[in-house]
Length: 196
Image 1 (cartoon, helix red, strand yellow):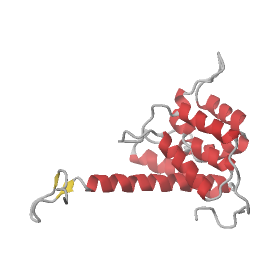
Image 2 (cartoon, helix red, strand yellow; image 1 turned 90 degrees about the vertical axis):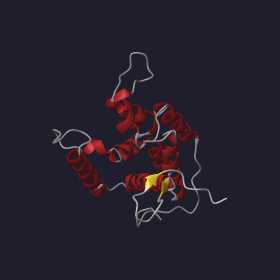
Image 3 (tube, helix red, strand yellow; image 1 turned 90 degrees about the horizontal axis):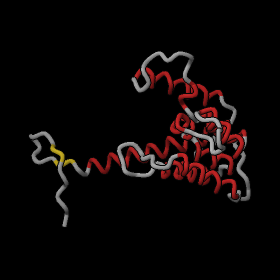
Image 4 (cartoon, helix red, strand yellow; image 1 turned 60 degrees about the horizontal axis):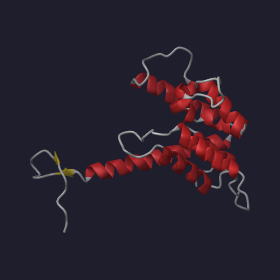
């Protein structure tokens, strides 16, 4: 079970409300056209999976909504434009929209799950470099350790679990393309002979 030890487990399942439906539409609009890395799979599938894992672990509706929005700031913050004519744009506007629509608690969880929110002032290396990645992930993990919000840990674990499953699926798919023709020769990428 992903839920942190000592967390409250309710006797009766929480029903998802129209607030969840609104968050689903909001996430779908934010990530419209975005694909999972190196695939043709809609990114929304990842957000749905994370939210589903949260629900399956008896997470609250608030935590399930945060699961849908956990990558919003990081992936779409720079491109966000408020729907209000003449409205603000960018990360801060997206944070304000999340808070206004879904509440402070959802925003708190989403911010804790946004790993580039934790970068120390002044990047030490170019974004995407191994050094930057290590700094960003270390700061992210430290903030999760310090967090008293079990929902952030639940959403983060659901995110990492779904990412691990996707990596395993990719590995299995690509492994099926590897055919070793002879034990003494290097392998070549080709379709495996069918067993039929």
